[in-house]
Amino acid sequence: MGCLFALFAACFPRVGSVIIWLARPELFSDAFNDRWFVPLIGVIFLPFTTLMWVLVWATGRGVAGFDWFWVGLAFLLDVSHWAASSTATYQNRDQFDAYVARMSA
Image (cartoon, rainbow, N blue to C red; front, side, top):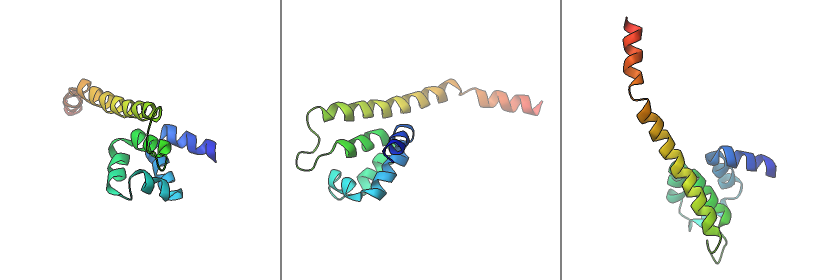
């Protein structure tokens, strides 16, 4: 089961976060101080960061020391995902008009 979760978390961070949220809701409630809105927004917009925050959170000390490296790495993964998708959208901005022109001819 642990290997299956690791596979889901690496490939589908939103699915991994939802699995943790359903299986161990106390992890999310401890990491986000019993708020549900902040992790929901995090799962939607920054899934790797939210998942890593929950995984490295320790009750009593929070996120400290080398844990920030993992949270930062997850944030870079999220930002690179957003940057790559915006770059692809920008590069393909002319494709739709050319497709419509070819289809109508």
